[in-house]
Length: 305
Image 1 (cartoon, rainbow, N blue to C red):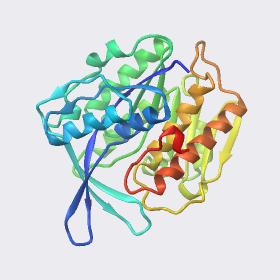
Image 2: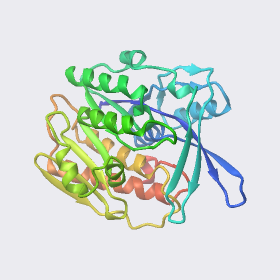
Image 3: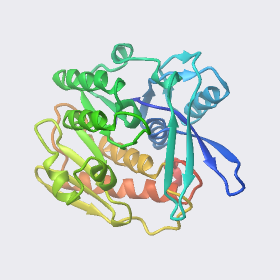
Image 4: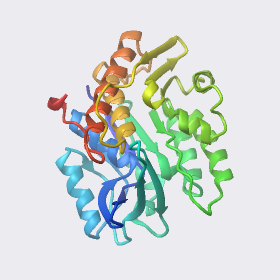
């Protein structure tokens, strides 16, 4: 297991609404969560997105180090990004983001290139980093990496922003998704992209010469892994749910970690074996189950699994 995961994308302070009207701050952001989860599982991972020099930025930085993640970005004088979060009765979160002039947008693919080198690098990007206009540059960068033979990973993680051009966002995501060697998408993502009538069938259409592994998550229905050679399924974990914040990020980290442990990212790239993919689904489920029992995103350490 010698793969180096390079993770780009937002670190966000989730201000979680309480019943008394107050807000409890929690550190989050899909890519930042994934980086921590990979680090705790024992993967070699670098996080390249800038972090603010404000109080929250210092907490983000220290939490990465505590999770054995290399911070390869810069410290920015811009403030940390904020999100207001309302937790629904079923434990699912609803977000409203505040992202103008924030630290996690204070960089570009050009500043990341030096960290993405070598055949055993996996570059991962997700979520709000793919929103226009930033996402256009990242779409081009993913194409460059594919031409260089560097493995790419994308978690679609659709996030609609009030008042923004969500039509352009949808079009951009449809350009980005075919650039991922490994693609994670949920049934909710497909629905928001107008592709959700038959999630499993749609997920199969996302496979192409570049995208060779698709991880489809469907909440209580479990997760499916699809390749040109077959389809594998793992039921959802049967566990008490505190909330679902970060569960998808922890699940995907477990999936990627298991692929790496089996040598799936060793060059030259080959579609992983059936056993490797089924084992990766099991690991993803175990990581999700641990996080579902926690409040907020609390990825498991390897020994806790």
